[in-house]
Each structure stands twice: as structure tokens, then as C-alpha cells.
Length: 489
Image 1 (cartoon, rainbow, N blue to C red):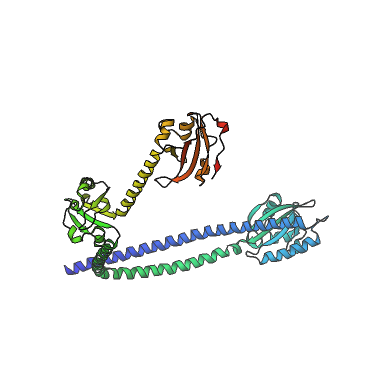
Image 2: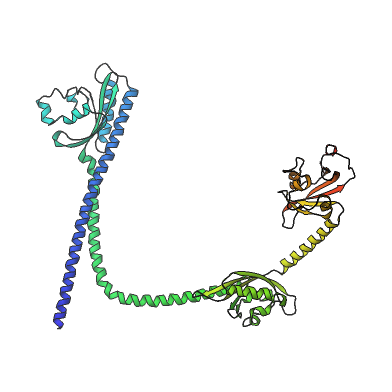
């Protein structure tokens, strides 16, 4: 039984090796075919790009010949020959060994850098010597009869060539500028890249096979130990992260400049940060374990209880209330209440508090000042009113209401002048720029003339408004045209 089991295991291992060899061989074949496909595509791209370069070069030669040289009566002038000889030599040294030659539309060769003995022969006057070098003149006939374009043909000595031709008019003659190169020289760059790719691919395959064999051999031996070590490391890391999180959380809570309370569903305080003990005048030990509402002023208990119940219902709420402190005056707290969720259920409330005692004292003092100022304005015999930049009336005293009636949401120009738009003599822009103006104003509604004082003031929201004071000067028969214009003071 034991030997039979070992035989089964051996056969299984052999089958696996056979499959590995087959898969590796298939991968190698596919990779080689892919490289060959990419190589052919790369060759075509190289040829296409090279022909574009040939075409640009031929066009540049046409442009230079047409703009820098004078045509002769017949053939190519000497200065053009010298120029072409120099350019042809440079072209032969360029990548792809380009050849520059020229012929006319009649098939006569006018210039050739390597076969001067063929100038000025004509392709339609062939002899035995021509046939020895050129098996066919079909490509020449295509050049003579065609337009600008590219060629791929078999030249002398069976060499494959690629070429471009560009026609031009030189004087009264029709020429064709041709640039050709040997196909093999052009594609040699792609061939070098192909061989390099094969070498790199072979090295990569060998490394892949050796590496895969080593990894498969060692994988089974290390898997169990690595899994155990990983689980142990994860436990250690998790414990460290928990301890770090608790430390950071505690440090933040204890140093933050806000009162933090945790309250359970029964309304009992379960946590308070010690850093805010001085703010409320109570120790954390005096607060934790006590009802949340027991520390607030009795008059504020209804709003505290209502807010707590609403927050436990899942809503975010806030309130302001006084805290009773031992042997000192009460402090005003602004509290933000946030529900605590655990597994989708509300288990308590987090209360964040900030002291508002000084803010409330300032607000109370400001309100007293506003009330005192309003009582002064209300008691004045002169008319007083306040408007904003939008010509909305913010205040009128009883003296103005007595003369002009209730405001009822009207703009100043509607209330005082019965106008649909801003008065033509309105000086609000100057007042809001910081000026104080004094003058006289005549009212059609009351039939009276008033001494008018206008000045900028800040309203209770800290926004600039205009304060105006009307004093009846007794000139009731005065008309609007007699009123003096407003002057700066």
C-alpha cells in the first residue's frame, strides 16, 4: 500500500512537470511569434517614417533649386551640378545612404551621383548594357509618368529599394527630383532592435523558469511558518495600535480647550475631561456618576432636559445654560449635543461645552446701551430715523411717525416722498463714505421745511447705516426751490 501511494505521488509529480514543460514551451512559442509580429510592424513604421523624411528632403531640394538658381537653355547648369554633387555626397553619408538624382519628363537622366556615365541617357533608348544592370525600367516609367509620391521597387543587382519623387518646373523644363535608399539599410535599425529583444526575452525566460522552480520548491516549506509569524505580528501590531490610539485619544481629550462630557442613555455622566475643571468650578470626580441635569441652574433645567431627550432620539442639538458652581457665581455654557452610535443603536450622548459667560455679559451690556440709546431717540421732539444702504428704514422715532405715519415696510423714498425710486437729492452715497452733512429739506407731505443732519453710524449688527435728524425750522411757507443745498461739515 505504501509503495503504491508513493507511485501515485511520483506519477502526479511527473504529470505536473510535463504540464509545466508544455506550458513553458507554449509561452516561448507565443512570445517569439509576438516578437516577430512586432518586428514586422516596427519595420513598416521605420520605412514609413524614413520615406516621410525622404519626401521632406526632396521637397527642400526642389525649393532650393527653384529659388536660388537660374535655369539654363538645355540640361543642368554648371552651378546647379556643383550644388547637387555636394548635396548628393552629404545624402550618401546620412542614415540609409540616400541617393539624390534628377531626370526630366521625357525620361532623360540629368544628374546621378554614382553613375555619371548614364547621363544624359534616355530610358526609351535602351541598349544591351542597360539591360545588364536593369532588368526592368517599370519603376522609372512610373516616376516619369506619375506625380509626387513614394515607390518600393527591385533595383539593379536585385536590391530592394524605396524612393520618393517630387516634380518641379525649372525654367521651361519639367524635372523630377528622386531620392532613393536601399531597403535593407533602412530596416537595419529595426533588425538590431529585434535581435536585442530576442536576447532579452531569452534571458528573461531562463530567469523566469529558474525563479519559478526555486519559488515552488521553497513555497511549501515556508508557507506555514510565514502564516504563523504573520498572525503573531498582526496581533502584536494590533495591540500596539490600540494602545497608541488610546494614548493619543486620552492626550487630545485631556488637553483640548473645551468641556467634554459623555452621558449614557439614563442621563448619567460617565466621563469628563479634567482640563476643564477650572472652567466650570467642579472636579471630574464630582461630576462623573451624577445626573447630567443636576449641575445646571434650576431655571434652565427645562431646556437642558428637552435637548438631552432630542439628542437621544438621534438629532443634533445645542443649548445655553448656567452651571451652578460652589461658592462662586454661575457660569454660562454653550453645549453642543451629539448622539453616540454603537452597532446602529444610540447608547448615549457626547456633550461639547464652551464658556460663554463673558460673551453673555458683553451682549447684555450692549443690549442695555441699545435700549438706552433707543429711549433717548424715542423721547426727542425732533424726528429721528435710520436707514441702510438699500434705503430700507430700520428705525423711526415717535416724532417721525406722528408726522408721516407708520412705515409698513416701505423704502425711505416711498415713506417720506411718495416716490417710486430714489430721490434725486439723495446724499446716501456720501454719508456711507464717512461724511456728515447738514442742510435743509422741504416735505411736500407735511408742507414743512426741516433742518436736516445726516451722519453714518454702526447698527447693532456692526453694519454701517445712516442716522438722520429732522428739526422743524418753522419756515412752513418755503418751497422746495428755496431750500438751501446740503453742505459738508
